[in-house]
Image (cartoon, rainbow, N blue to C red):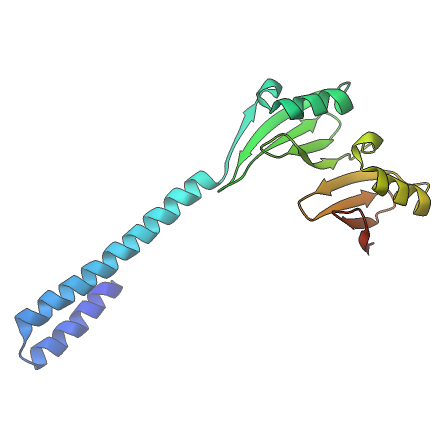
Length: 177
């Protein structure tokens, strides 16, 4: 409808200037060009959106080997509720949910990126030694309920509801309550 209005306005201008056939050719080209660009944009957006959230349930043995070893070593006695492969635009990751609500997320390569223990604590050997030492020295009676890491930092949630952020060299950079 928008393009029809533009076409009619342009057509009226052409009729007033007595260059009807030349103007129609130019207007048709401009309108078609806009229509093609808009159509391509809508199709591209639709294709990207359709592939953006492509999650599926998989078996544990379809996880990367490193993830399987991690689960066996630190959560071997726990029952797995489901294993999910998540695909976003660029990234592929894995999520393992245990029957007690514990959740572990892994990167494409099998490295853990988040451990969320709702009813228990994160296994101590998983937590970097400097972070464990800091927590024991400053908060001796608390448990680590969640730990998340990325390229720049580690975020740790404690049982007393404090959130500690450490840089990549394990220096404390933020404390939230």
